[in-house]
Image 1 (tube, rainbow, N blue to C red):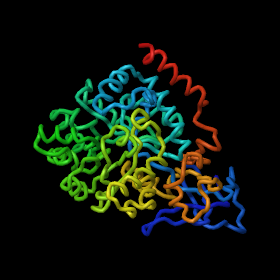
Image 2: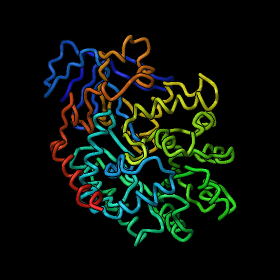
Image 3: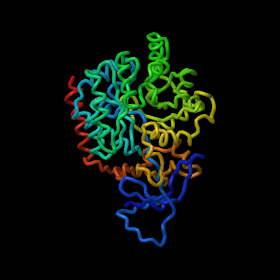
Image 4: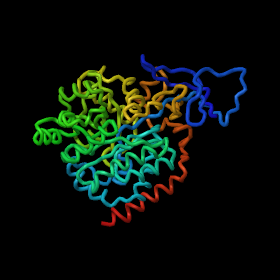
Length: 426
């Protein structure tokens, strides 16, 4: 059993965010106690972690990633989305194999852990290699299939769904397509049939660019959300990544069906895709989560930067300084991210919840004075404040050191070798 004590604890409740002086006990994979120190009881702990005034909080849930794309970081930048995909991403991704995806995923996991992220919602190829990398590292991930017209055999989706949902407690699998514009009607209907068969939610890149929306209207006479809904894609829930170019009707559709919208502000800005109407969607009752997208389009995997942009861009977009309050954004990054992934037992610090936690060092200049800790996290927090990250009851990162079963230098070298031998040689 592990004891966290002598610090502060951030708790989400129905009325907002509460900061307590509770200590937290973890046994195995779960939180077993949250409350004041138990005086007079003799409890044998395997480890007692003195927080020394630091803050223990639920880990961030990065709700949209393409983890193996770390190899494309800073390789092709300052291009529009269509050229970026056609000229850099797709040709180089064709060179990936299972070994490369495994190693590149591990590289991204190091970055997730050092910025307080305890789970990701990932869409990519070579799903089993990705899953092995996560399990071997002790990291939590939910995989969304990214079916499109380039897949050799769309029935691989069902095989992955059945296999990877039985892969163990750290990995699960959801249904999805890459996007409407990369997936023809026949394969879209196949995905809908899987959703019907397993009564599963469906996910997709959605309304990321104006061109995407206009293309769908040209093909089907409807925006992407309305078209996908018309064929039953959202019958069992799910949602979309990006959701930048959403009409009022699209927003009403999402609200009525209880769909999630995942905003990726850094990627959308860098690719000049636009600013998602986060405040409008939230006001309509849509649950918003936050993702980084890939290291190819972001180029960081840093939830602190995403939180800051998520709120600041809404203030700019609406010319309203009260838009998208920091406390709401922190909930998006922790609670809503977990819920949209189906990680209902990872949303908070409470007895019975999974021990997916991070420790934020408050004894740093950017965290002082402590007038409002949640606001500090969103507006002035950074990766430098992450002292420890725990996933499933295991400390995977602490004070600059990683405990993922392999030394960082080995992971770095494997990533560089792949670039040297497969990408840069041309």
